[in-house]
Image (cartoon, rainbow, N blue to C red; front, side, top):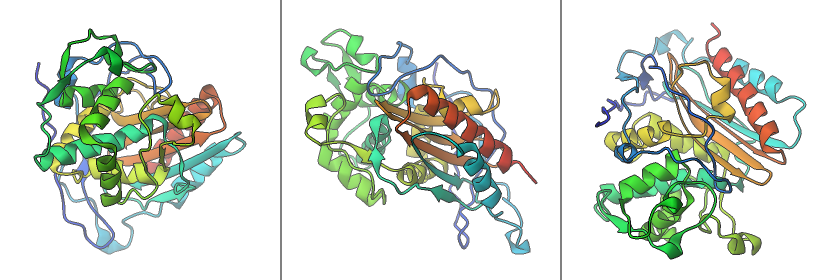
Length: 335
C-alpha cells in the first residue's frame, strides 16, 4: 500500500523566527527495540518503507504561529533548559543536548551541543541528506540501485546482510533500511554509490561543521587506526530542523526524509520519555560507551531534541535520555 504524502509548507522567516506549524499528532505504533551500528536488529523494514512516506503523519498547518508583535512570542526557552539541567543532574559520563523549536514558539538552546563526539549511527543522517541532494541535482536516482554481493556483507545492525546475494535493491530502499533499521550494509552501499567526499562536502554545505564521515560502518581497522566518524548534537539538531521545516533539499525531499525517520525501529531513549501516541521521527546511534538519539517531536509546538552521551552503558544512557525527553515535553507545554 502506498503511503500518503505529508504536506510540508515552507514559510518565510520573520526576524529570528522561521514559522512552520505542525498539526495534531496521529497515534504512532511503537515497535520493539531496534539497533545501531554495533548491534544486530530484527527484520521488520518492509519494501513499502522505500517510499519514505507514512500514512499516520500529521499534516502541516500554515496557521499563524502567534502574535510576535506582542513581545511574548517566541517564548524564552530558559524554563525548558532548566528542566533539562535538572533531568541531567547527577548522571555519570557526559551528555550533550541541543533543542530547537520548529515553529519558532520558543528560542533554542544548547548544553555542550557543539562538542564533537563519535557519531555512531547518527552519521547516517548525513548520508541520507547527501543522497537526497544528489538525487535533486540529477546525479543519482532513488529508483536506481545495486545488486547485493557476498563481499559487501557486514555485521551489526540491519536486515540487508541477511538477504540473498544477487538481490537487487534501489537506493531508495537502501536509504529506508539505513534509517529505519540502522542498516550497516545498506549504509556502506550508499557510501559506495555517493562517495565519502560527497558526504563530507554536503555536510560543509549544510553548515554541519562538526560532522565528518571518515570510515564505513563496522570498519574496525579504520576505527582502530583513529579514523572515526564524528558529529555534534547541534549539527544533528540543525539537520533535523531543516527536515522538519521542509528545508532539506526541497519540501518533497524533506517529506521523504521525515518518513524514513518516522520508521525508526529503535524506540528506546528519547521515545520512552514521550506520551503514548506522540509522533516522533528520529535516529539513534550506539557504540561501546556511546549512545545517541535525536529527532523531531510533533505536537502543538513541535520541536527538535538531540541528546548525545559518552561514558555510560546503554541502559544508563537510555534512562537519562528518557528523563530529558519527558522534561522537555512537559516544559514546552507549561504556560
